[in-house]
Amino acid sequence: MIVISNPEKYHAGLYERLSNENIEENGKVINDSESGSISTQKLVNESFCEQYNITKYKHYADDGYTGATFDRPAFKRLIEDIEKGIINLVIVKDLSRFGRRTSKILYYLQEYFIDKGVRFIAITESFDTGDLSGNSEFMMILKSAFNEMFLSDTSSKIRKGKETRARAGKVMAVYPTYGYKKDPADKNHYIVDEEVAPIVKEIFALAKTGKNPTDIGKILTDRKIPVPSEVVGNNHTRKGAIKRGWNRNTVVKILQNVTYLGWVSNGNTKKESYRSKKIKIVPKNERIVIPNKHTPLVDKETFDIVQDMIKSRTATRVKSHDWLLKGLVCCKECGKKLSVVEQKHPHKTTLYLRCNTYATNTHLGLCTPHSNNLEKVTDIVISQIKKRCMEFLEEERYQRIAQKSMNNLNSKFSIPKQIELLEKQVKQVNIKIDDLYDRKFTKEMEEEDYTRMYEKYTLERAELKQKIQELKEEELKPQKIVDVKKIVKEFVSFKEVTREMLVSLVDRIEISQDKEITIYYKFNILNVAELQDQEQEEETISSVG
Image (cartoon, rainbow, N blue to C red):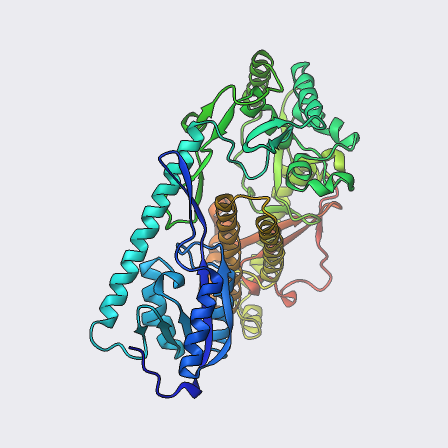
């Protein structure tokens, strides 16, 4: 029995969770909504507060979220309020509502809540961290282990159900393939989208006549044909303006999709375990492909001819080059990395740098070529780095500057920009998550698809936030000056500069469309303005291009 002798000191957060999973057994789909609806859980939690005269702060309800992960929106708001000191008591109907991962449950109950001075109560099990007498703690561990066993069993049944539907040739994608619509009478079956199908047929026809994917993309963009994501992902945008144009990758993806043969391809991705959020791409030869499941948009002969043409172009493509500045040089205007292209002359081949944004969407004019002779750029960069290093090694000057500037492994000039870019990516992922919730709420998306996509995006967001946190911590971390001096001396002393030496010193190299080069070093002391000559301007490659 739970005993609360001083209820007036508590402000309680009432947590509720419900996960709805579709499980298929013996060919029949059943709905496992677990025990207790959200409304029932709220009633139980509120009744408990009234019985013990506990002040209720508010409810935190995650409706439609699996207990396998603690990355749930309401749960995270609960933790935020604990961090703010608003809540010092968490109440749940039972342990399974809190979660089904034993390791995570033990972390929160035996470490986190204790550190934060938070009491935890699971009503139906009479589990109370404020009174761990007798066998109550052992029973909590045992109960959470049983909950995780249930989760593992449920996960296994879901995978089995998915495999059964996959082998039956059921369409299991969240969004229909471009050129098709989901059959109103059967959401697991495709029917032809009469409005879009002619475009797919035209793409294959153009490819068969010898048009390459880039040219096909330009033709479609010039005609203002909406890209696939605007058609199948956001139907309401069909009447709006085109947000982006067709590129080579989009066209190739269509040309290689066996769905247009009337086949259904399932099992294209998988998770190794319910404990893992990582989604892996399954090799094509391991996927479940069932032919003759819907109306084809292209015949097998045309499809095979197009595949051979794609392979022939891929085989003749210039191989990747290993160059000294690879991965360090980026476009100042768009931030994308610069890649290398060959230009063949009668007696030699010259390598040029080129902006990847421009190369991918040339016809859209999103950026400029940034065409620069790689050899000349490399010479200028090496020369400039050596000059900067020599200045640094002037002992008197070095000591004076060192007293004024703390060193960071990652330059303070570059870290804020990196954080800004990552925060923009987080906002974009949040928009995607909000869109997912809207689709789930309006029943446009199956529960299992929602869960899969949500986990994918939340994992992506968590990784981005982790990178942001690491950068912020790195920005404050001091770096020993002697290490900088050692690296600089090595760079100056060696006659031949290696890639390893460059990477140890340089964070990134920006090249503008006006051919200006700006070098950002990994050590802030090399970036400080005092270290540069007052009259020196940014280096310009006037003779390149």
